[in-house]
Length: 212
View 1 (cartoon, helix red, strand yellow):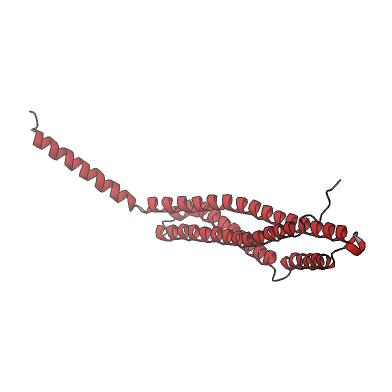
View 2 (cartoon, helix red, strand yellow):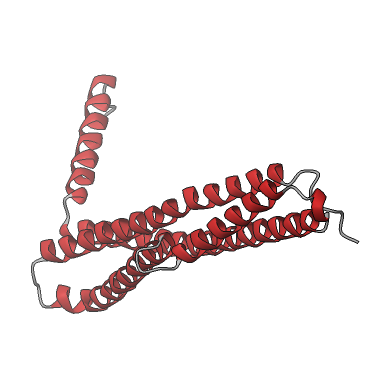
């Protein structure tokens, strides 16, 4: 006996309803919730590792650039001052004095970066703390992940396990943001030294002899 089209449609709708209800129930399955929370924590740690590696490289590149700008600034000022001094009585004393003042300011600014409250010291402390905390979070994830099977076998509260994974994800994201903030603090310092070198290059135009 054939089913009418209306009966077939009703059966199909009922089947879809059962499937949807089952799928919805799966979302609330504590084992699935734990697996989802674990995956999010693992992703946060994975992305954090990439960020720390990239940021550390960026950090090193910026400080090397700052050091290059500083050294180039000093060399230009010294060469310009020396060249001007060799003119004897025709030397521009005001220019020589200004070059000396700029050189002293560059030395002072460079020394200040590494002092206790200097920009480099403070940023290094922040980046180092973020890296240290991130390592602790990675260790915590490894330990909890290793205990997950025993936790389930002991029929302990899976909600607590899920919450632990969520806490790890949240802390990993915080450490990553802290590292990015430490890097961001260096960018204006680099810009300042880039500008200082650019101003020095303008200042010594026509005063520095070509290198042989």
